[in-house]
Image 1: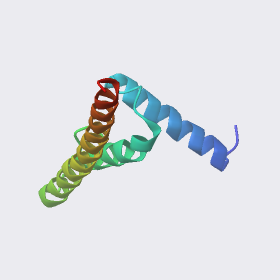
Image 2: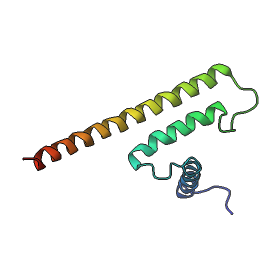
Image 3: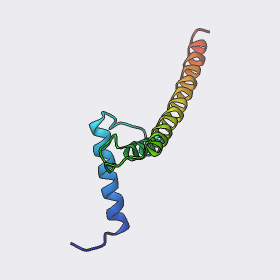
Amino acid sequence: MGLFKSQAERDAQKQAKMEKWLNDRGLEGVQKDNYTQVDRIRTYLNGTGLLGFMPSAVDATKNSMYLLQAVTEQNWLLIKQQDRLAQQNDEIIELLKGSNK
C-alpha cells in the first residue's frame, strides 16, 4: 500500500463515501444534475457536527453558518426540482390539449 493515492483512487474513495451516504438516506437514485448540490449540502452538514465529524469545541457562529449554507443549498435544489415539475406539467397539458382535438 503506497503512501500517496492517485487522483483516481481518491476520486473513487470519495465517490464510494458519497454513494454510501446517499444510500443511508434513501437517496441512491438522485439524478446526476442534482448530485453536486447534494454533495455541497453534505459538506455543509459535516461542518456543523450533525454528521459526527466536528471536534468537541464547536464554534456556534461557524456552526450556524454551515447550517444556513446547507438550508440555502437545499432551497436551490427544491427550486430547480419545482421548475422541472412545472415544465413537465406544461408539457403534459399541451399533450392533453392536442389529443382532445
